[in-house]
Image (cartoon, rainbow, N blue to C red):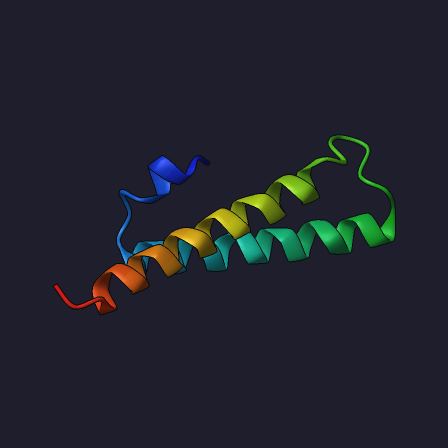
Length: 69
């Protein structure tokens, strides 16, 4: 996901998406610990970057709401 796409979401939707991505990352890490992921070993770093993007947009929105106008 691109940051531009994420900015269209509300804070509640972003938090829900963040929870889903973290659960998916947890499952992939567990599978990778059992045996290496043969399909796509690059899924874990990609998910981590998605999570970072989501957190960045959440922080941007929080700062925008808290700044006086």
